[in-house]
Length: 382
Length: 216
Image: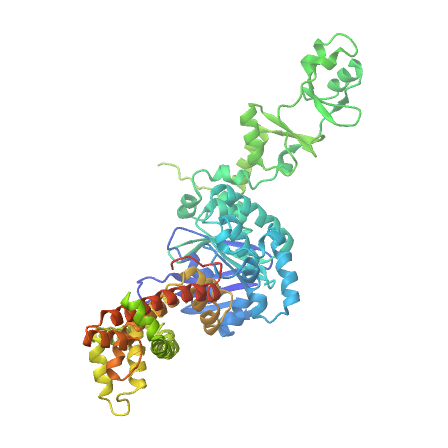
């Protein structure tokens, strides 16, 4: 979809190239995040795609076509462009801003109007309330939403985003990131995204391109990047807490223990004890008659219980539960917060799916590292 | 009191002078806006050219108006004519208009320019749809300064044959008739105030509500 082929960019005033021999492919429908310290060439790289900067050498292909031999304005009309300071036209209303590219392309006004309203809805702005507002009447988050809507107006297959969420407060930022991820699920654009924030890169990217001094240091999935950084620079850049960060990328099902015995609340004590006899575990999950989980009972409690139904008072509710889409990071957080070594996973908050254990997380992450790290050869001291 | 009496008794003559004043200024400002805004647009991308043009404009501005009238009159083909009077006013408008056009066009937020380019707007379209609309308040301010200046300088055009409000002031001085001077001066001031009002209206008409009331 987007291909860099040995692309370099030299500025006359600089001794070393801003981008040095970059080759990289971004696949269709994927988000590629360029990340690195300031001056690493990430922004230059992004802006060479729509030729805000012209490469000094090399080729760039967008949609299989050589970007450098196309008409510049036509190329840009086919690429959505979102920048940090939004660049909304202050003298245009929200409507006119979003309508910019469709009007450039000569759409008839009726189609433009339909599209603008559709887009505002898509980015979570009420069209009726906002079409006739001017940018200065919008909050930072709203402005950036309009910026995204404007970039997507003519439905370009490719979007370039230059630190799009860099200028808003942290809360709005997280919100915009999440909205954008949901949006991208729907629209599946090919996106190049620049940020200096590694956490944002890990969150937003299908693939991350880490750059330093104009060179591509590593181009990989977030998971691989965290588990197997290519060199010392990458390891430092992603931070010493990379093993914590990777937790948010690893899904729960991998460590879920599904085999659990379940008893009904209404069961006799005999049934409960029989279940324990057939189980190695020290807990039983207790459900009500509608298969909703109400809690658990431990082996020792079941042994203490005297009468047939008296065991019910030993049922303990779970202090916390997790939804199946939670990550290992969420699981760990819940465990630390409630000081427990295991958390149940519940679908739609009452159907039991299994348990997550702290020990399993530990060994799973450890294995993930071992799989990816090259074997260290240790020389015996002579 | 004498001034009021003079005004009432000579109403026809005074209205005639005022009309002449208006005609001269309207002609001058139309030409000045057309020419100097165009020049401002032409030099917008060249700092060197802009510097040169603005240096010439400053030089012209520094020539005393009576002297400038004198110089123009001495040019064959111009002479003691309305052309000379109009040309002098147009020349005085050069600096404020070109400078404001240049500054305003180049003062557009780089993020807005980059967004416009990034969306595939042509240079010409960016000029007409983005830069000029955003520059309008500042350009208007330059034109406004020019007009106010012209109103005053136009009074001196009586020395090269104009029969406008300057006549009242000049004759008043020669004949030590303070009533004439007062009538002339008051009308000229009222004129300036009227122009201010007019430009307020013009701004509402030409400037998008999205940027109105901002100083760029």
